[in-house]
Image (tube, rainbow, N blue to C red; front, side, top):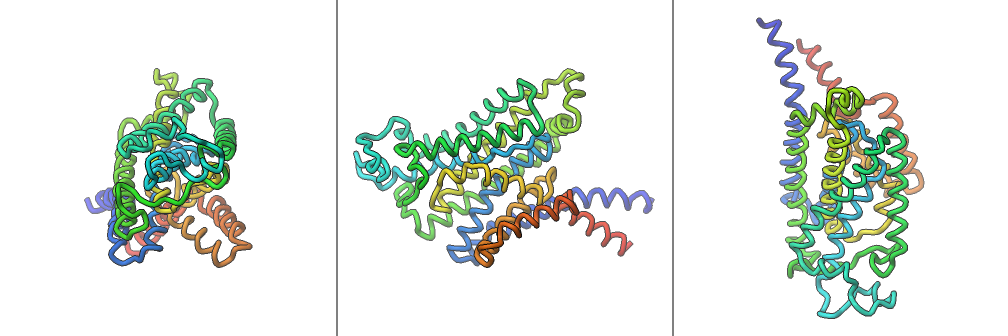
Length: 356
């Protein structure tokens, strides 16, 4: 009986480890305002917001096998939607944002009117990125485009959308983006209490997104996602329509990216077209690859590790940090293809063998 019980307990331990790690990360994050000053708290809040996007990216890449190099588009759209609301705060009736005045705009464009309302802004943040991602995916997957061709299309989308935002100076602020936020819901934007509230909301949303992703990947829907990844044609022969599931999960990842952008902007203080472009979208893939795709928790861990490494290395080694980040990615892909979570699993096995 003991010989049979040992493998079973090892399997249970393997399943519990990601949940325990996620619980530790989230509990530690929730308590961070008690021991961190404002600047590091804002920085951690930005990393956690990016983690929301990474969880969504892991759903489509790690579980459904859909490599997207354009998640920055939906992140940026969510960020711009929130920034447009924040930009409207603190303005007097009839007053226009500075960049509109500089562009010769004499009245508030129609597209900006919904952002005078906070509830309407929230509805747009929750629906616009998700709907655009779903429609884009449904259109592309309906043509049975997949693999590297889909990745190239999403990359082109990122370039096109970022260029569009740069060229629409009168609506988006052009290459400078949107910044200079003053108030939100009547509270000072940069007050400690306001920024702490942004942070705590980010932690709560991250916990909810993580729980949803964990549930979905362990449900019948998760089985279908893995079937799409491992054999889409076989799934089609069984009577399922892979396009439906791929479009849905891509829309869900778009929702995660939009939420991440909307929570990132208040803690970063700016949104610019560069955040929608090709390079940030590739960085997002690196987060998931380094953490370990197909694990959910790996996406979050990878985001925290790579984002902090980028922050530290870009300050300490401004001339070489890009090479160092690239080297990290190459080393992980070549020697640890399952990422940091795979490395942790190997270490756990070694410890169990040594103590058994």
